[in-house]
Length: 157
Image (spheres, one colour):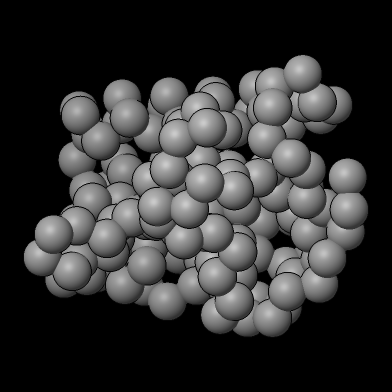
């Protein structure tokens, strides 16, 4: 495993590449996302400190996701093969977060999605633009704004 420093805005992985890797964030913040046929971004996952991020596609197939640094970051990079998955806890956490997210997107209201986001990523709400949070939650920025307003009223913050 090698460690690298990446600059804010640097793309570590492009959709269609065959060199998928596993990234462990030592400091900073990464995100994975796709771009649909209409050019709209859909954020799949954020990876703050001590999180692992990767494309789940088999190593011999083209990647489906872009991975980008949202902040200057220090990242440990590992070749993608499950036999080398030394950080099993981090991988299990990633799978659990993704499973919970899929279920949430199928069945939750915008305010419930926002509450789950805050619970899952408590330290990044001020680190990413609101349009990225809206994309991650699968709602428009206007819907996110209304959900946040309702959440603040509910929690009297």
